Length: 201
Image (cartoon, rainbow, N blue to C red):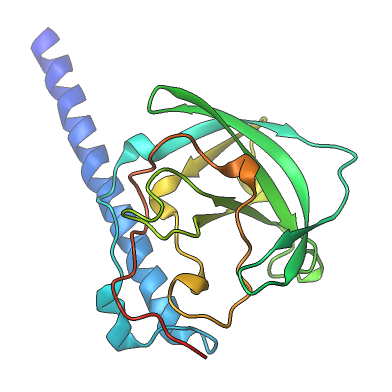
């Protein structure tokens, strides 16, 4: 009986691993395809071979506690082209990763809140100790949504972390991740450094 239970657990674990890997692979194929569809994309189909990612690792899929912030004021988040965009701090999330207790802030883009397609978007920009080594020096982003928050918890999958357009080309207004989202650990998940030549507009 014990053998059967252990075997079942092993099979379940293996199946989850395979399905999770497949899920991330599908997500990345869609991510690449969107570059071709997007009219303002910095990349062409020939550039996609220069996109690289860490292997899918469910360790970097974490469930975080959410604390909704109140009485926050709109602020200007600097961008890499020297301008800024208006955001508001929406919530603070806390979780444990790599044995460390970490906190990050979720933001809402003021300009997008009036757009029906993006009004529920939550923006999670961050930097970590892989920057300028194996990942883009300017940090990476994760997109979430208000509906992802359930009973004051949210799942954050760093395997879906992606580079801002500024990693591939200049001429874009990419927000600079605030210092409060600088993680004191290495996030060995998501998109790596682009190996193509950076474009200039």
